[in-house]
Image (tube, rainbow, N blue to C red):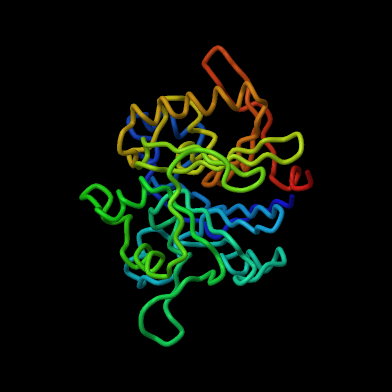
Length: 282
């Protein structure tokens, strides 16, 4: 098995939105913001090459929308989606599977591009099967006022129309050594990949635990649809990870890529923090 992690792009979000009811006096001690209360987050994608499959987890914002759309997210730095893959020896045609943790625009937008003909859209990865949980797909297709700015038709419908959509109905193994947990607090049907590589198990925490600062059970985002479910789901996965000695891989933390866990008087917290490059050979 080969593993790669790369940052598509940095972007900015409101600190209050990222930490919900947690006061700024507390969260600002562990995750700094600028003078406008904005935090810098990353958009890290995971590549897992196992057997005959080359799996890409999440695809970032993409570039289909206009400048006005992207003005509020302040995209900067990062390798870019296609260049990040090329830097690791992959072309878009090489990707056999795209696993989308969920269908919010910053996680799936890069999976669809404008058609080379100038009209319509096509898949960025033409040979890939796109995997989404059925619950999330149905939820996003219906849309709702709370998430309508995150579920964009141009990111979703072309995948269904391509005939390359696989809807995941339940937790379990999708590929050899690659399984998913399904959660409902952030958005119904959020998939959390769990990768077993030799003696190490990695959890790509996605939007369930976006940064190491979100390890405390009640430190959660305002973006979560049902925060009480998020708390229970975090507790379940963190307890499993602590017991199994798993490594957490953070998608959005600008400062910490990975950590192990330990039990403290305040609950489960980060033990060792390190870069993903230290665990790519397994």
